[in-house]
Structure formats: structure tokens, C-alpha cells
Length: 391
Image (cartoon, rainbow, N blue to C red; front, side, top):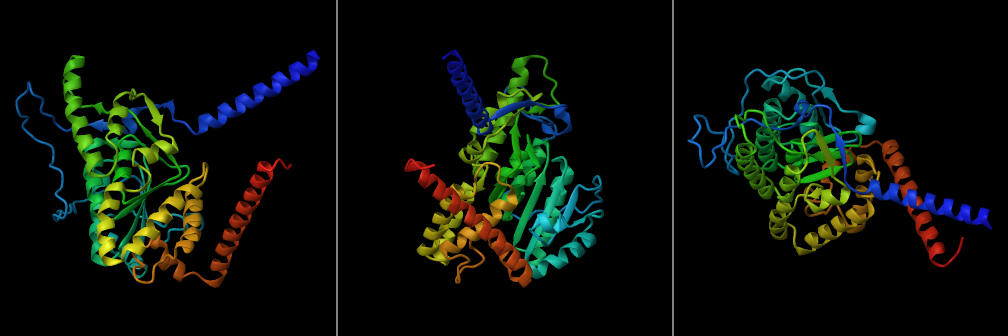
């Protein structure tokens, strides 16, 4: 009897441990970072607090939506491997395209020219969010407009950087119809989260983390003085998040995490705080436009697809390729791409690439889809047997 009791206790402990491990994978975690200054969320812009005179140099004002932006074409050098450009979205089979060693107007225009025919580009950026990143986004966006490349994906992997530069780049991205990816194996930490927030659509399979903003240029000598400065910075961050469809609660959470640590956001938090999926602010704007252009039925089907995508495709551990493949298969059920509004249909950035597929490529993709469908059928059958008390 004692042996039986001990065995039951052991099994119970293992089950509890397994449940805790599963629960931990689905909840936020906090980890240590080696050096926040290497990425992080660093603020250096001057701030004006109530007790101080106006500083000699004010930070750059936020861009006005729709207002032309002067592109800085001054010489720019970034570490090798920072920027790559591809006209393909299938990164698993096609890779990340050509690394961009030269970032002047002529070199970028030549690199973008092959993408003009398909109307799709994917910009892979691996590195810090800084002034160089701002220049890259301004230049590529400007030339994409000139080439008529309407579908744009920012494939991002960054541990963070400068808060003010992230906000400058983010506001430019928000006005330029970019989708932002954080692939499996990639990270978007600290200041990078502000860039993620700006995308029209955010596709996340990697890690997204936040922590407290660092005031590198501060002359504060007391906690009260530093907090007054940080309050001004966080007010700017809240304004930015609000206008770009993310919850201002993100800024509040950042303040509570020491900059030597990193709070990794769980999948449900990314959705809750408006950092994953369709940008809520852009969605409101698009809804009005699509009702006029594509009709009410289109909008109803688009909303139904978005709900089904969240429910069926965003399972834990799914990589970005799997998310895209699931969405492409799922949208057929909602009659997308739409014959009247193909460019406005969900995942329309893939349509030109799918049209250029060879029969062999289409067959391979179809086989993958069949495999996923068969797996789903087996899971449904297994669940039905379990609910009926079967083996």
C-alpha cells in the first residue's frame, strides 16, 4: 500500500511540474541582460521640467502625418550584415536577399529595382535602433514610393537602442504602410518595441521584451530630479504609443523593470497591448476606407478572417513561416484575395509572389498545406474520442 501511495504521489508531482512548466511557457518572464547600453532603451534628448529653463536645443518635433519628409542622403556606413534586401517573402527557402554594403541613393535604387515588378520588398535589419536605422527607413521608404512598391515588410532583429530614434523611425513607418516581422530566433527588445508598435501589421514569433528607459545624458543627482526628467520622456512615449495603436500601459510596465533586467512579454500580452496582429489605429482608419472602396461584405469577411487567424494560426511555438502558410490557406475560406479589392485583401503581399510560383513550388506548398490539414483532422478526431471517453 505504501508503495502504491508513493507511486501515486510521484505521478501527481510530475503532473504538477508539467503543468507549471507549460504555464510558465505561456506567461511573461523576466531575465537578466548583460549590458543594457548595447541595445536597451536609451534616451539622450534634452527635456524641460517645470523647475528648469528651456534647454538650448529642443528635440526634433514629431512628424506631421502626410507632411513630406526631407530624406538625409549624407554618407552612411553601417556594420556589415546590418541591412539586407529581398524581393522574396519566403525567407526559409530564399534567405534574406542581398546584404547592402552601399546605402547611397544610386545603390539603393538599383537594389530596389527588381522588387518593383512584383511590388514587394523585404528589408532585413539586424542591429541597434539608432540614427542609422532612421536614415535607412527614410531612404528605403522614399525609394519604394518612387518605384511604386506598395507591399513592404520590415524583418527586424534588434536588442534596442535610442528611444528618440525609435520614435522618429516609428512615426515614419506608421505613415508608410509597413508590415513588421519578428521571426523565430529574432528579438525585439526595449526601444525596438516602439518600432514594432508602428507597423500596420505585426507578425511575431520571436521574443519581445521591455525594461526601464536609461537617461544617459542626465545631470540629475537625486531620485526626484531623475524622475522629473523621466516623466517627460515617458509622456512622449505614451503619446507615441497612443497615436500608433499600442496601449500606454506598456510605458507604465517599462518603468517597473530595472534596466539590468528584461521582461519578456507573453503572447497574450502582445495581443492585449496592441503589439501583435493588425494595428488597431490603422484598422480603424482602414475600415472607413474599405467600406467606401470595397463594400460592407468585404469588411465583414476581413474581420472574420482576422478572428479565425488569431484562433487557428497563432498556436504556441509556431514560426513565422508557419503563421504565413496557415493564413494563406485559411483566407481561401473567406474568398480572399477579393476579385474587386485584391490589394486590400489579407496577406496580399504574397499574391504577386504566389502568381510567379512554378508548378513544382505550388505543388510543394500544397503538400505542406495538406499535411497541416491532415494533422488538424487527426487532432479534432483525437479530441472527439477523448470527449466521448474513448482511448
